[in-house]
Image 1 (tube, rainbow, N blue to C red):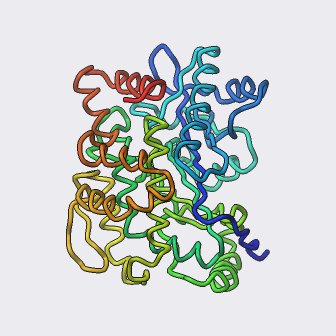
Image 2: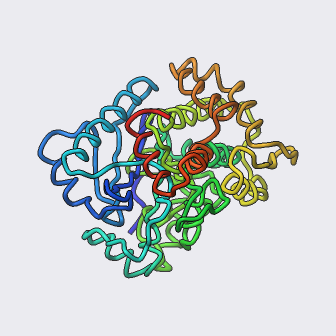
Length: 374
């Protein structure tokens, strides 16, 4: 069937989705408790949307549509508080972080939902290994062509969001040496990576998608696991590269950094995107996953190498006027502290391990960080 019509929305509106870990309180391993948690949360109005995810040791929460940092952060805090209170009643904990540091993927249970069961049948063990946790940010677009322009204009900034959000240094109880090990699990899926370079929605929907659908490989946009993908039913583009941060404060800051950057790009302040921009895309993305803020990236336009940290700090200076117009300066202040002083949450978790000497102590630190900012 044809791809659905792109539903225009107000430009630069925001929505945030967070995938969260459910862990037990006695050894901080993952707990297959999403059924119990969702049942408890359904008894009273929830300050957002909460849904199951692929396995029973994770849930996803989503905000409403926002235009500014303050109300977005306020809703995320309300969601966080509601989840923490529910977890306390069930004697379970909630945590951010892109991976659980020592869970065993083969012990995870697929949530009983037709789509998840279908994906499990298709992808086999990869479905259980997809017990990883990300933040998705939706940005509203007034037209379908604007969505495709913004999607591709953002390609050079993807390493910023990987490095800033990175919170998955540990997997299978070892330090992977990656700041974001989570994205290695995402890369295993055949329809991951980057979207095709198409700037016309008519060409995207009626040529590219029609051809892909005719192969039988895809049925809807949900079948694409691209780093950034259009969501026609929402009228948005969706950034999908971020690990779930340890705090809702960092999550809100990342979303509003993306919003300010989108405003800057939509004013055509940079040369338009082109296919050759993607020559360095995979290299830049690897550098951000492996080394975080200390990674190096290549500017696709100038071919110059610069550290990701320095590129973020330079970009913040460019987009600050746009953040001011959007009442988002507090968000950019948080981003600047992370890039310039505090580091990302991967470095924080490594410090916690060094102090505690325990991989369980890493999960405990993540649990405590969600309850109060680290």
